[in-house]
Length: 246
Image: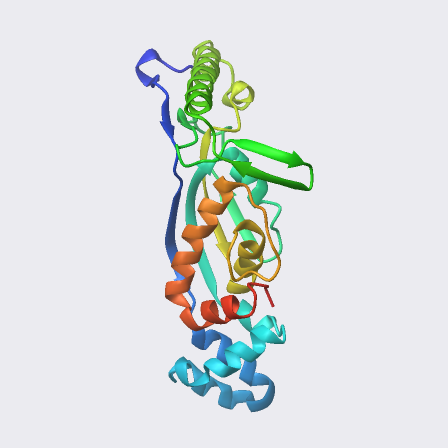
């Protein structure tokens, strides 16, 4: 269908991400009944109604000795809005994850684009495999914002021109950059989320250093905050044992 001028929107720019917990079945007690079935059989059902605080030692033991499967018997679904390049990194995580992302084939993509905020470190120093990011100068931040916004506007104008001429959305979207915001639902369990967090966040308690891109770390931090509220004992054990997924 040909787009009409009334449907054309101007580009807008964001430096943040959106992470909402939209659905969950996740509690520390899920870890306990799943673990105790191996020794208690049907009596493990009693753990569903007991206070998990009394068994936090078992959760820590399972985490420490990497008995991972009891941490899989739960589910969290997040709505995430972030730049496309974040989702391309996200989908390297396949085990224990399910994704559904908005489609540029079936809807006109909204002109919302990512521009780094002032706190985003811009300059990479050091050789590959051994580098760090440092603060950018005011001039570098001004240049980055100006150049990115100009490029985004030009790309979206080209996209709109093609749509207005009757070109299919699935073809026209090819001119859009990976800084475009997309949205998706991502569903995981605590074990798969812990593996994600171990790789995509930096943390002082991590036994294995990680060097994530800041934008996916922003998503990870918000997901972790939701999870910590649902499973505080499991989250504490994860931190206490070096933030290594069991």
